[in-house]
Length: 390
Image (cartoon, rainbow, N blue to C red; front, top):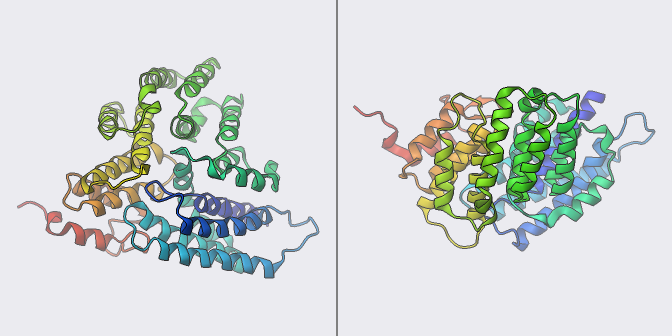
């Protein structure tokens, strides 16, 4: 029961992260979206704390109320799908993912069988957290504070508490928790590197808080621990230099040409797969691109194509080290849809085929036509360009 309860809580954390996400390029002030999300908040505010109850605390779940909240989620899903029917780019896939996630949570509560929902939804967690750590948007902080006040976070692993803070846009609390976790003597820097906690930290300080000085000061303090191997010391020293160099870009208004330059420079910094020497370059470039996409005004198809492609590559090489999550796939698909004849369209499709997974299904297989991401549709958009040269 303890295992089931822990998994169910992570399902709901995932849905909360997703529910609080208003993607770049959409109108965050759109009253239609705001109404939908308020309904979702109300349902999650009930379901998430409920999932953390101990089985021996003497209380029983109110099944009728659970069913009402689940129905609220399903209705919100239908409304979100209708509201975003004409959208392009990521929003098209975001609505589909939300629909799948809600269906899985419904199964988890209704059938008391959280395993299937856990494994299918956890693929989305890191993407959803990345959505909230990549741009400034403090509008949900008060809701997040009220929600977390209703929970005993001592029951949740510290890394998941960080995700919850990020999901609810409590970035200062997320930074404090991450710094405490990273500085703990029982977490060796090599282990911290494997868990990508420092990448999470860079995303919050660079993209969400736009505070390169905060990141630089912490990296210096982290190096003072004295137990980092040479390869990490070398990387962190390079990050510190890069943070100082890119401070004007992080603080300035977004510039697409500058994002391209930083992105291209990162191409030559990683001599081996999984190497993160260029992480500050990539997070900085992604932050500029996200803010550029989030600005009001129409974008030319070629610009969208270019921006989504760079974001997809960054997701693949830097921001998705833990598991195959759909961020890279959705971004590259958005790049193709924005401009099927564009410069990067074939490269984007090849990357999806080579590295893409949705619900553990490799997207290069012949029958890989997903509800979330339809490979047949992408092939149709690219047409004869996919035929090998004779």
